[in-house]
Image (tube, rainbow, N blue to C red; front, side, top):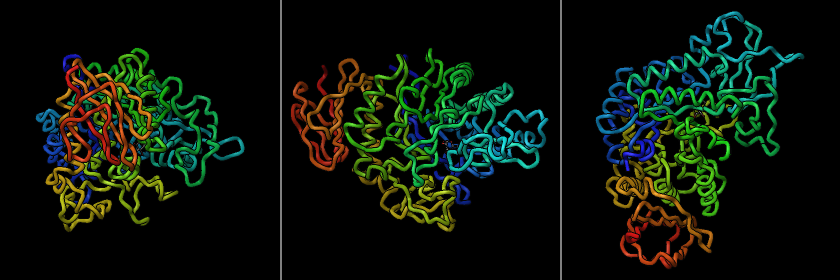
Length: 534
Ligand code: GLC
């Protein structure tokens, strides 16, 4: 099995938001040494790779997604040496380390931008996207920032606007300029040479913008209370001609190092998403598949439809992947409730393809309510409802003050969840039926089961639409996954399958023989059953 598959296909990824994982030096913000001290936890849990959201020097206007130096570490997080130690310690434990690469924009405090804005003739001027005001004055076109408001900022000194698709302090780089490409490739080399195992590339689908700067269309259904990123259709700012060549170049660079991974952040409909594998599978290894994150209703039919359509749309040889949550979206336990979140993890960890877990989801962390005055996310400026702080609160390690995230007398950068005394790693490690022990058991079973890692996938019909049922098979190993995506008991009928054996229920209270021709699932229950060797 492992001879023909790469680690990023057989393994499970785990996203750490460094500010919120563990604070080792008592400043209220998580850091690299904190992450290193928890590598044994990640190994115990059973994941294979950790992806770190940005750890680079940054004024923190967007909490590290506004980078002022691509080849160093922010002192808040530690030093380059700390990062080297993390990589080395991770590798010792057979864990991979993936960094966040943010090529779409730099901080306005990056020396490149400082130079670029100094005069119209500066040699770095064209590294960014500058335009004259519209003929009658005002911004050059109608493009809006994904955080709300115009995407153009007027620069008094040189009398032009610069483009920022996100915060005003995140100036978009001009990827049509070969010097920009070269500089960003140098950044990739820098980290690959230090031994990192790959990158998650931020907003990869937006790197190129329309060269005629045509107006975007407006989303006719958008309401004031909706997410500002949905205000326009992005037809001239997203997924533009030329993007695949850029992705291909990054991939070729990574390939020259051997076994590294290129993951792309992409929010697009599935037909366009899968194009990011590249025509000759020479694009991203894993174009992030966010369909479970963006789906409007958590419902069995919708889940099946998503999985089947995605499987059908994948290019030959393209490897699937699944995500339940990240630092930009409401946590899974908040979206679907804690009981369904258990089932969602059974789904995530038994589907075909690489799963990505978001820190804290394994203990059932929910979005935390935060007072308006304490909100920090730049996206919250226009509308607190769209703040992403709620899903970025400190990891809950134990029942001590500050949940063990930081020293008891320190104020963490974001508040800790009220219910941390119940939902934390230590408490859940002592409760055999906790969410944490379920996730760990799922990971353990997955690791030991070729059918779950590389087996085929086939959905199975059910008369009643509340359960999602599928088969995973590799050689003579077969599993049936039956998920009751409802709050009522359900009956599942699989007449052809005969006798099986439950190996894991999301409620962690039953194992053993199961007559698959007809069986019951309790409300919110998912069951993983093994079939006799076929
Ligand atoms: C991506 C990141 C998000 C960030 C934005 C701008 O969507 O995931 O957190 O704000 O890019 O870099």
